[in-house]
Length: 247
Image: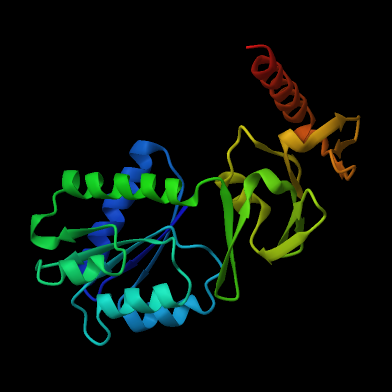
């Protein structure tokens, strides 16, 4: 799922971007979460309580109060280093200043048919994917953390928190739901085996009737509704490993 933020003091443009993005998401069959703000001040204020990583942010450069350039600068200072920032503007005057803030691209409002928007936005989604690389990224108290995916043995849902369990026994906790986590992970590597657990299939050593044993000997319960999916994915991973060994 892509978490996308729009910031523009003109509701007309917020609605247009929203329509474009929802149309793009429908065409590409991707999941999105959209938040939008009518000023840089409102966006920055919300970030202190924002518990999700922002993948893509479209910001108007010319806004009343704090400008889009200043808003983006504050975001970078707050730790949103991997957020793909796209500036929208009626003029190219501040384009080079925008690139100093590691902005990805810009949109000229008076030259913005859907096709142009899609070209920029689709490249932004690809860049967001590549910038994350083989890491799981999460946010806690305005701080952004990155954990190598290969080091994660499983995720556990405990109340409103998610606990990331690493192969060496270390843990990290943050606020989210297990459903959100499930949709954001590579389904070829991670599989949900219980309403409260997602495991890295390549860390599974044994599959028993009601639980799995991970390579670090941790036992994780299997929910009845997830049993068939787990067995299929586990044996597929075994076959894939054998192909790698004997190819």
